[in-house]
Length: 383
Image 1: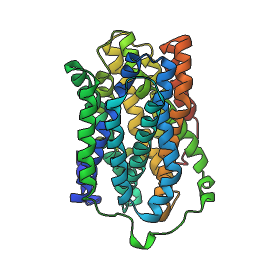
Image 2: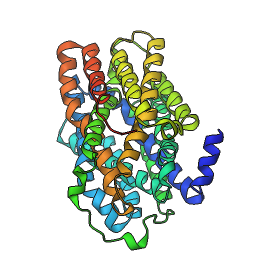
Image 3: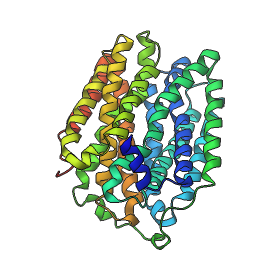
Image 4: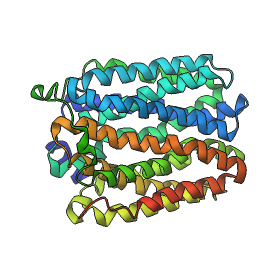
């Protein structure tokens, strides 16, 4: 808690930060409600392969928009994209009310939802880290990231409760309300990009310099592993008669939050490389264990291990990337890192769904875990 209080002082958490934090929290609850969307896909006749395509295409939309949004964040500021991203998520949430079959319309909605989520991750994270001292970035990114972690348990818990009351209409309405409130809050946020930085254009060649390629590859593999749990956990728990996904994400969030609040300084003090590889290996084992879980206890264990890995890896990768860039290029650099995490999920989700249809969930999650195992041996930092 001492670390947390010191972080609050260092980054001058004023009204703006808390508005940013709450807006990000609410829109992320919207997004995590849709971890249950695979159940809706099954209900309207979808296969595991189709679940992979429907879930993966949203990540594809996030990838496409981030090919543009990074440079736009640096050229026109953060605030317009904070507003637009929440608006797109709200519109997509409304359109789900009219889905009754696997069709082009559903894929269109998922792309719009992906556009909104891809844009908001880049815009919110960039706005949060603007003007933060270099030596505090891992800690602060981890702290702000709690607004993305808590929804991983709050969204599924809320969604499962709403589905116990009725059908997916309740879930979609809740999603609309949450993102609408987030949209409202974004109008009260001020611009964090210094005025002198507006209009500057990124030199794209820098994306391949200073060891950034290794960080991009690690980000891709990290995204492939973690997105497997987001996309396939709900149907896995249904097939194996487990009580739902909230227990997994509850322990995932608990362990990751504890790490960020109380251990966030350790990578800076002891060296990033001492934490990155062990965290990636723990994440690999946790994802692989998901496919073997037959009781709630094993889901708790798997969720805790994935939480430990994510709690260290995400802020480490984002921080390593930003340190290799200037403030004027920060939007593009953070966008690129998060883009590749989503790209990992987009590219591998249809493949994993196909493998699940052929060989079952244990093999699906084993292969997903192997992605993080490979990432563990990529040299992302010198210390």
